[in-house]
Image 1 (cartoon, rainbow, N blue to C red):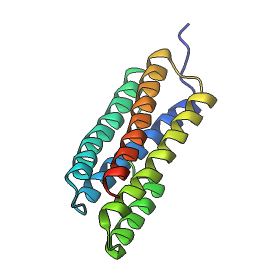
Image 2 (cartoon, rainbow, N blue to C red; image 1 turned 30 degrees about the vertical axis):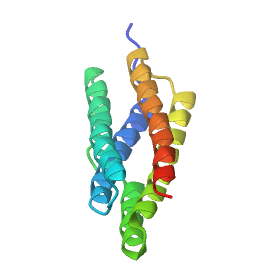
Image 3 (cartoon, rainbow, N blue to C red; image 1 turned 180 degrees about the vertical axis):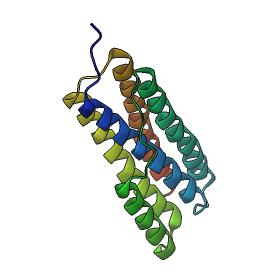
Image 4 (cartoon, helix red, strand yellow; image 1 turned 120 degrees about the vertical axis):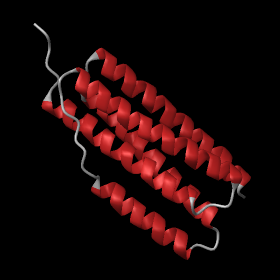
Length: 151
């Protein structure tokens, strides 16, 4: 008998879908507020990447007969509002944008770690989540490199 994906697991995947779509929008918006070519490249690359993360998670749910949610994420909306305010008030927008990226990436990494630790997934979904977690870890390292460039 085929094991069912629990409602809790589906809810957590949906949360990651929302967060990734929200982060993709935030990065795209932030790219319009930066002057650094290196930061602009990071924001554009990771905006596309996070959108792909969300789409891959949607596909994973559909493959197991579950429906991904399509509504927005309130914490992402709050972070976007903070991004807008901080960028508007900051004399050094690149540093402000980068600081928000650090905050967002660390939160995403923590979320992936917690979800993977606390929830059982089908092996294919777990591999996808671990791969995405690894990419988020790499993003954290890349941000550290960008911080050095912007000093």
